[in-house]
Amino acid sequence: MKTWTLDTASARAALEIAAEYADTTLLNHSVRSYAFGARYAEQHGLAYDAELLYVSALLHDLGLTAPFDSHTLPFEEAGGHVARVLTAGLGWPAARRARAEEVIVLHMRDDVSAAEDVESHLLQVGTSADVSGLRVAEFDPAFTADLLAAYPRGGFGAAFLALVQDQAARKPDCAAAAYVAGGAATRIAANPLERPQG
Image (cartoon, rainbow, N blue to C red; front, side, top):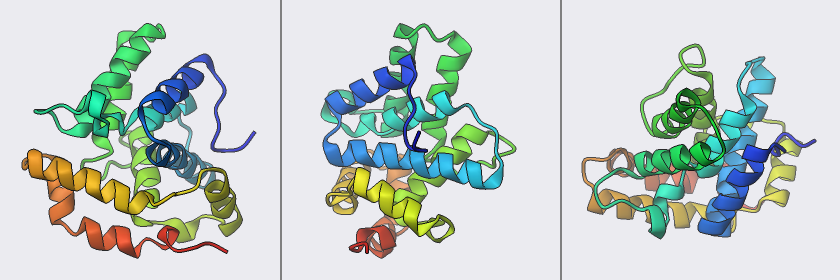
């Protein structure tokens, strides 16, 4: 089984919902984020809850989609609520639903160490690798090439930048606004994954 796939009832439900609401560009980013996080865990010997990470990764950007974009909440908080609702329907207990929300919210916060919260750390690693190219050089180039072939970027960098710039403009106190003000456009443009592979 590839590192970027997970086959449980909850994982299949998360993929189905993500595919229904996110366009291919955003969906592929979510899968790649999980894949980078899972591979990083493997490389560093980190034990983690794979299903929790996968479900959180697949749902983490749904707050950027029109049906779930809150006019008051930052997108990661809106996405966290989506995760709570979906996982309630899947029968997850309250504490595990809260963890899914927490992992999604924390992926946009200051760095969380693996010792503090391994799943949040792994989602941060995965999203940072995919969005900004952070730590990409640490991954086997063959793994990265296979992942990009299976889940192409399709102009992800520009599309994602537009989404977070929109969030920043409408919600100036949110984490996305700080991210944009901190040079998101430059970091995204410098991501080696944005260049043709091969």
